[in-house]
Image (cartoon, rainbow, N blue to C red; front, side, top):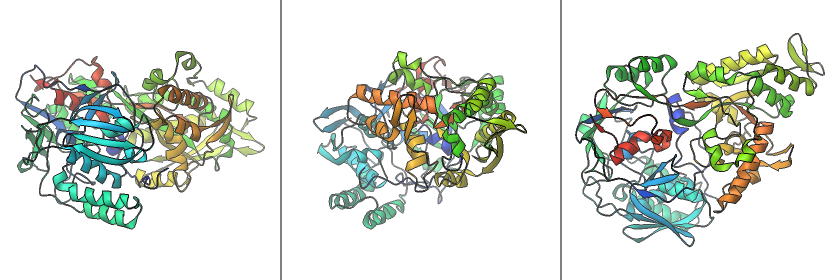
Length: 596
């Protein structure tokens, strides 16, 4: 572990932020290896002109600002808003179904010994007229080291061999590095942040770390920067004269990436959360939205004849047990019983209608990734834990429990616990209510307790719970990112110990060290060895269920093809991309979307 590895931040997202962040894969500690990139088409053959209308919440100045290297920026890079990619693209975008990259600001990348060399597109300009060069990328990653860019767990230097080449030197080889570099959330301008990058490089090379006072002070100084306006090297630039509390317009940026080839002349983004945007979708003012709409809103969109894209978000709620405060659940048979005592299909339907589904494989990472990492013979070993109260009851009896006054008990002690959940997550609240009713009916006495996520998450990280709901899965093509959630994120990486789950456990295959295997699953560049580690973790996870995934949240993004935009059929594989590699932004970039 490197000295400057970032500490986990205090994270208290809104519901919309959580859905967004669950599919962001670019700046986290984990990412994926995939096939070499391909050049993005230089524009579609569809009709040019017209407007595309999207939606996203933002704050007006002075609360909202144009420092795209800190929180609160207006429609910032993909780490905050999907529309930020239109101004500050990454080096490439990832196509999940094809396991490859579309190059954006990069035109190629290749390993060169211990280095990854990225060649950049030539001839691009920022909208202030300055050329786009390797210095902008260099600046982004050196400032990004202060921000906790995950690639710095594996590299120790970034250099510029020439104006169009950036070199990343690996101290620790890993297949995760490629994505951490190519899909980092937005390249920022050296003209704005270059001085911070030079000073950061000097501090780190002098032996300072991210926790050093000097680095903290520099980061604070950087955070306080308030540029007069946004810069763009993407196909569109923000017309700040149109910025209101209701909407803002992006116009073509001719010198930027794909500026001459994108089909729409303008992109209009309406401001607002779900309650404000749903009526605009129904009225036809918004062509596409990502707001996590309710079952009723989803139905109203369908009744209006709109298409609904239900791509995977690769995450959802899971039941976690505090190892110390629920000692009975140290017996995996009780966790297995909980999985089968809850009708997880029904739970997802109540929360999200057609936009939720329980995992089939119960491996700890999303089903969609299983065929890429687990051999078919091993896939057949996974139990699905379908709803089966009789089988759950037998597990309880096998563990020595019998019902007393309708509650399972052993040695005179009844199973009675509190279920803690984030009350401001309406979908998770529904899942918690369904779970507590199911378990109470089954014979485990559950008392539900809700609190806002801003309180719930720190509490659960500190181990202040008995049973709780937290996330399983994450939008990353490498399953290690999902598997790290129960074993690290909600467990060992927190000062309070999270659920206090020992990462060395017994299962039918013997003793398993989950932490060691998590390291093996990301180490080096040998995918075969990584697959072996992932398979071992998954088989053990499926058997002993460190947590119980309830369902995966799917998107329910309305697509209006009646007024302005021609959308591909929903069978197109591009819709398999989650929000962190947003399918709409990719199709805007390459010209697939065009006006009617």
